[in-house]
Length: 117
Length: 255
Image (tube, rainbow over all chains, first blue to last red; front, side, top):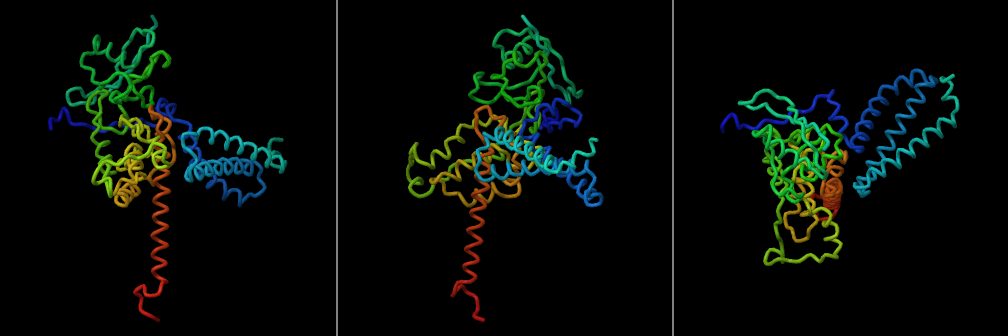
């Protein structure tokens, strides 16, 4: 093959390329944030065990776990037949439910907010 | 007449080594498409600009490229909606031939790996058999058959970028239409291939393919259906082997 015509792989966009990030779709953002929330839970959980009554850790843990679980439910539902073409609506609905759960649980344990003063 | 600035990714070839974005100013006419702009640029400032198109009306899928980061058809993307600054790049995950033209070989090789053709069995092997349009089987397949292999889903898929061996949404979507077809006789072999390490289980449900497909196909649904089928087959095989193990006369010596 003529070397001038030899195909080469497309370069991956570098991490700092904002165009690439802006081009992500909602389902992809949901996926990215679920992975990030998993990492956050891994870091927060041992801190939570060591300092069980640190409010900022409890409220951050609650937020991360709620988001992680809601996206987990989304994956479960689509795995078992929820139509993927409606996944944006499912994502919106479950995010809203997660927010309600988060706010509700945080209010039930009002102590969560003590760190705000 | 308003103007739009096109930033087109070029270079990186042996005879044109410098990778860069070339800027072109284009006068925007009403209803002008990205493809119209490319034709205008090539007809004027950049006669050597390489890109592909064929039908110009969204039927062939040849003109797929990345517009402001997202894979789209140049012929069906209006310049008006792009905000004056337009960045054009070749489809992601394909080897670039030159400028915006990519080598689709890798994509069609994966169609072959997924055995993307009907292997007729029974009655269908002797003469064409019709699937009734209203039958549940045909209705399951129906939303997945309009693929024109433009490569947009493949370029949008995050997992293809992660695992170059992954079959990708289009090949798996095609495989689903065949696995779900009772006239096809290659079910077990095809399922083994498309549900292997680089098959359906590589899909991480990011739904990029479904979001990006200009034909409104949902390869995600096809892939999930393949996973469920593989799971059912696996459960059946496991149950059968367990039953063989405990059934009398199964070949095991008596204790």
